[in-house]
Amino acid sequence: MEPVYRSIIGLARTVFFLEGLKFTVRGAENIPATGGAVVAINHTGYMDFTYAGLPARTPKRYIRFMAKAEVFDNSISGPIMRALKHIPVDRTAGADSYKSAVKYLRDGELVGVYPEATISRSFEIKEFKSGAARMALEADVPIIPIVIWGAQRVWTKGFPKRLGRTNTPISIAVGKPIRPYEPVADLTAELRGTMQAMLADLQKDYHHEPGAYWVPKRLGGSAPSLEEATALDDAEAAERMARKAERSNPEG
Image (cartoon, rainbow, N blue to C red):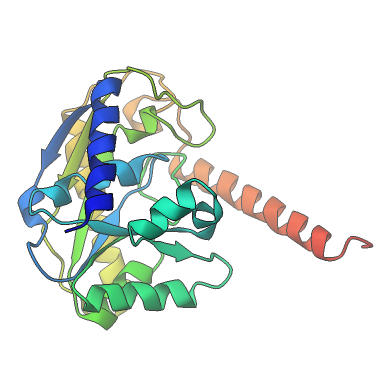
C-alpha cells in the first residue's frame, strides 16, 4: 500500500479532468504485473512523467522516476518526490543515482527514465544515452518502451504552459518488453528504433494543425528539424558551460 502515491495520482487525475485532457492508452497489458523493469519514455514536455504513470495503474503498479536533483531541492516538490520514492539525478555526478536505480530494479520496482536526457525541441526521438540499456542489463530486467504524443501541447520548452481547460488529446502507447543483451550500443539502438516506430504509429491517428509549434517539421509543423534542434541544444550547452567556467574563475 502506498497511500501518498495513490493520493497524488488521485489529485493528478482530478487535474487532468479539469483540464479536459483526453487520454488514449494502448498496450497497458505490456506493463509486467510483478518484477523490476526499466520504463523508457520519450521526452517532449514537462508533464510527460505525470502521464507516463497512467498505464502502470492497469496492473496496480507505480513508477519510480529518475529526475534532476534540483526538483528534490525545491521546498514544495522535494518532499513529494522523496515520499514517492523517486530517484534524484545529479547531472554532474550520476553514479549514485545509477546505483540507486539498479537497486530499485533488483528489488522489483519499475524505474522510469528518459533516454533522450532532455526535452526534444523537434518532438522527434533524439539520440539516446546508454543508461537505460546499461541498468537493464546490470539488473537483468526488461525494458518497457513508452511513447507519449500531445504532452508538448500542454507545456514544453520555450513556450507558455497551457494548464487550463484545453481539452488536449494525449496518446500513450506501451510497447512489448525488450530483454537486455550485449553489446549495449545495439540494445540502445533497438530501443530507439522501436520507440521511433511506435511514435510514428501514434501520430497516424492524431490531428496535426499545419504550422503549429508543437508539430514536427516533417508533419507540416513549425518545430525545428531534429538536426536544427540538436544545434540549438549544443549551443545552449556550450553557453551553460561557459557561464559555469566564468563563475568558477570570476577574475578570468
